[in-house]
Image (cartoon, rainbow, N blue to C red; front, side, top):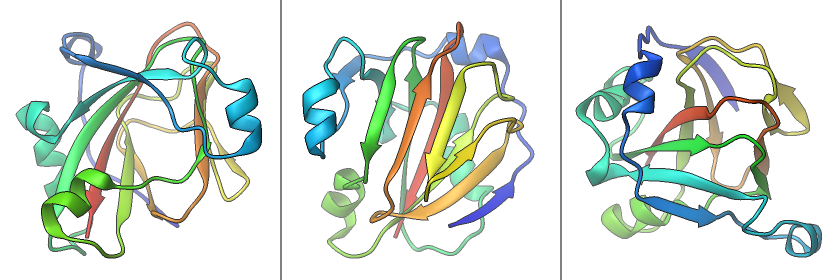
Length: 160
């Protein structure tokens, strides 16, 4: 896992204007997540590569250029929702560019807000600034949740 930051200035108005159409229940990859996480408490909005606005695609040019291929997406976690402990499959990237090892740049789109939480390698992340990013491998277990009162937005640049 590596961390960094990019210069980012996305307004809350731009984020609220995003037209999400894909609302779905998150991964349940462990016995515990199958038992306790349901569509009522672990569903998110996600906008994938082709549906993402131009400014999301441009994020791929702002992270370190250590890849040949990338796809982007944006996630909105509404208050009260959790993305339970999981590891990513990166289906979209592997379907488009073939199987192999992949990584993800998770980019926080706004400054941290009360109740927003991300964890990877048993390490919690809070108090981030807009543009902070974390790069991790597809095998890395992680989670995110929104126990706050405002939506939690992030972008993903998935690379190979």
